[in-house]
Length: 349
Image (tube, rainbow, N blue to C red; front, side, top):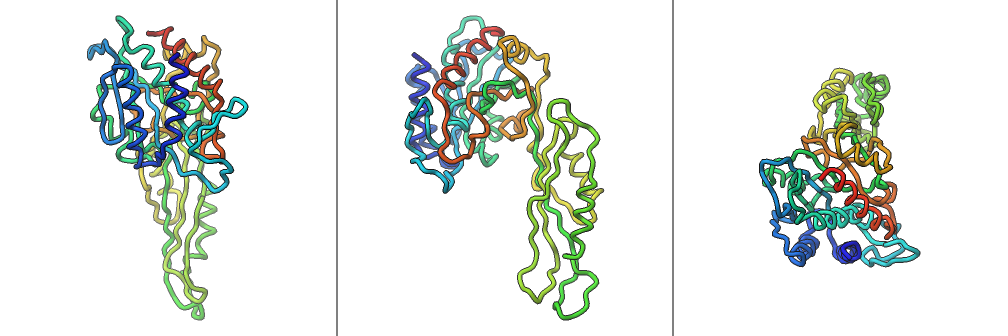
């Protein structure tokens, strides 16, 4: 019964535009779910959260979190992104896979165990906004309002395998300085001519610590910007460097390493999107393995980056479908996801 209602909830959410920072109507629909089940809830901007009926501040708390914002549909869509059509077992629609399936499955899980008597730990359900832009009004901004969190399940599409670690992200801006001049005059300080040295230094960067789960730190040059006229030597060249960080390094260590290695100015846009992990022997993980699931390290970023506690990324759907045209999730994936979530907590609750 609750599974079918969760699927209907997802269909309703798909029909409501919920781009990041504009999620108020999907937040209203999630509120309606809690009202229907007589579950008290709280709301901060577009974040909606609730705790289990037997909440005890002396017990540890498990956060169940996923997001209800979406990216904008890309131009390759051939279907109406806001039409939740089911075709051949696939539920189509923007946000169906990322992360609507996980969101409604976690809400169903929370509702199932809401009145569970004498739980070993508290449950805290948070349906949050602005995940896609890592915004200030996302889970990151909500944390100060929530009870202390001891461990977490973050709902993202993982094919219901256990993502026990997630790479962090630091985006750097590197600036190569030079002397501007007319192209007709000699200039031994042309910043464009310094690009090869910077790229060579970038290619030579090595991070020796390799994670057994996430692998090595990955450094990628993604943008170069310079010049505006054919006859003017620019004063500087701007480069953007994308660094995916494993759990062996802090973001501050990554920043210092790049500053030391590159012959130019280097500035991190932000150091807050850190890597996340949970011990392979944590009860959540061992329970999932006992139920036949595999563990792996996730290369994609989520709201785990906002958490300081052990966290597990887990949810129905496939990450490769995220942000794709004609996004979909299999109805069966949601059904199996809810059943697995319930069995997982049954082992430890």
